[in-house]
Image 1 (cartoon, one colour):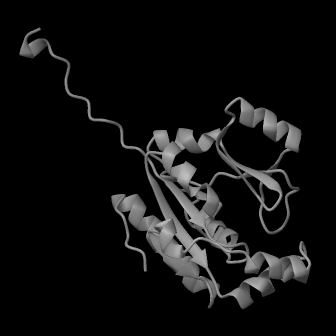
Image 2 (image 1 turned 90 degrees about the horizontal axis):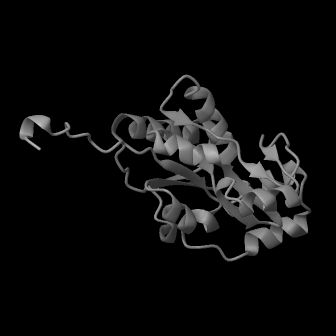
Length: 203
């Protein structure tokens, strides 16, 4: 084949990122994600897929609900982008998350810290935003939800968790002050991802 007959070079498609929002229950992840979803509602470069959980939806988080049996069936046939277990429940990201990232769109998702290793295996690009807060603030927020007893909350907070630096976060947001400040940090990070796709050092 002559040079003139060769097909033009086609650059590899740009992949989007799975932007994993992680941190302990009560740190305020859903509040920050909801604010970001509203801010970027008209931006085609970001999506905020709903998780699938084997628990009824509540005011704390809107999600899609499945029975354990249906969840297991879909999981067995590859019906999720990612799935994991936590606190006696089953969680998953829908297939639209993988589809979005393959089309160059960033997907912002609430993940368990325990699922990060598998997420990094399944997705070509993953960035991690760790949302955290002091234990006493987390306890107050969990109690306000009314889903757990104080004994359960104390047991949850007493569990050993991975060191924060072991998660290799790209950004750490300590959500212990006005929520607007934490929201602004997340929005700034997402805007940077949209404009450059670059990595922001953890603070």
